[in-house]
Length: 98
Image (tube, rainbow, N blue to C red; front, side, top):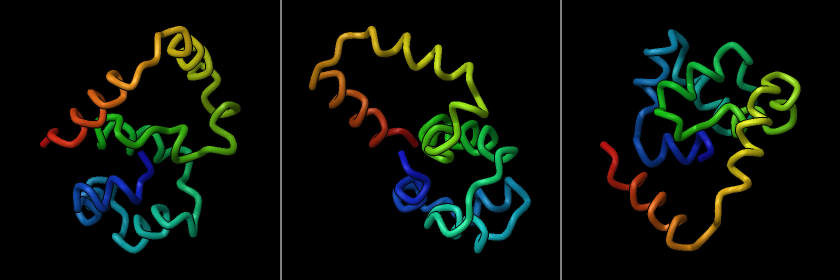
C-alpha cells in the first residue's frame, strides 16, 4: 500500500509524524512523493504501519540495492499460487484491521 493510501485510510499522519519525531508536513511530502523517504525511516514506517506500507513501496526505484535480502523473500512469494480469492481475503483483512 502506498503511504498516501495508508494515511487516507487510517487518518494517521499526525500520529506517524509524532512517532517518528518529524513534522506532519514532512510526512505529507513523503506521501505525495515530493521528497524521498530517507532509507533510515523506511523500516520504521514499515513496522509502524504493521507492514501495510512496505520498504519496497517507499523506495520503489532502489529498494533492491538497499535491502537485497528482500529479493529472496519476494522470490519465495512468487512460488505461491495466486488466486482472486486470496487477493480478496487480503483486501478484506486490511479493511477491518483496527
